[in-house]
Image (tube, one colour):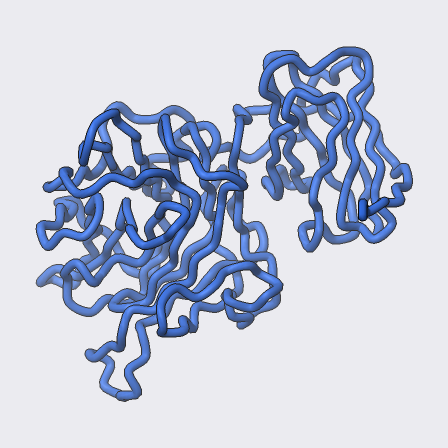
Amino acid sequence: MKLKLKFKKIFTANIMLVVSTCLFAQTNVENFDYPESTLLTDASIGFTVQGSNSPSISVFSPGLEYSGLAVSGVGNAAHINISEDGDTDPLTYGPERIAKKPFFSSSVSSGTVYLSFLGNITTTIGGDYNNFFIAVSDFNSQRLRGRVMAKEDSSGNLMFGFTKGYSTDINWTTDLYNYNETYLFVVKYEFVAGDNNDVASLFIFEQGGDGVPITEPSTPTLTPKDGSGSDLTNIKILHLRQRKVEAIVDGLSLGMSWSDVISETLNLDSFVANQRTVKIFQSEDGNFLKVEVLGAHLDGDHMVSIFNLNGQLLLKQNTNNQNRFTLDTKNQLQNGAYVLGINGPSGNYLKKFMFVN
């Protein structure tokens, strides 16, 4: 039985702005815009348990901020705490606990995949292969790759580590970082023809000095010491892991190019409006927006995004070469004003609209 959706036209108005983002094919953004303290494994959020040990990773407020980044300050964040072991000793920890979520609608098995996120480390115990707190995996989610780790040096400074997969030979940063500060991370995973030769790398950026890295640097912060571990057949799942690191993470974004996952805040002050008409209809239940671009066919890949009026990115989706398409907005938008942007080979199209549910 086909589901028939009822749509109503909603108010729109042309605006002027500059799109500093390059929008792309397949991606997903998680801003944890859910009630504080809700477990990520709650059915309303979409993470599930991997393994036999249930994670206690929960929604944390407020969200993390990184000046100029489009996902900064949107929604809340996720609190990854030290794995519980039933002991009050702060230097002990329990078993591995993982919450996982599909971030691609279909698995990616070629090219390059990028994961960006904001991270703020509050506590670490020791410093070995059990100190990783985030990774990606294939559809079967058994092999976790692009493992980002944290530990403390002998002087109390924070260090970050990286491995391609399971390895006791960890590459740790020589630069030192601070607890309770927010950093921007980008994990890059390149599929390479052949066996056990895919390339993983990690980029780390500091607020202020590094700013928002719109273009990919030529040299990553870290590459694995041992890059010969088994390759992934594809990438679809993102993992948040509890064990020996307490961290706040936010703005998780998975895409297939650097510009997919790194976007500056939209500038709403100066923009030459496109002449083509964009019509937006909202389903009566508020779960979908139907968008129609009049005047020309959208040849080639185009990306549609929704921003709030602070220029912060809330939602991305591919148009699949269609002039008419439907956006899933369930639990994504509150009542208020938003900006819808379409970007691709045919040009930029932007529309301000009111969402009323």
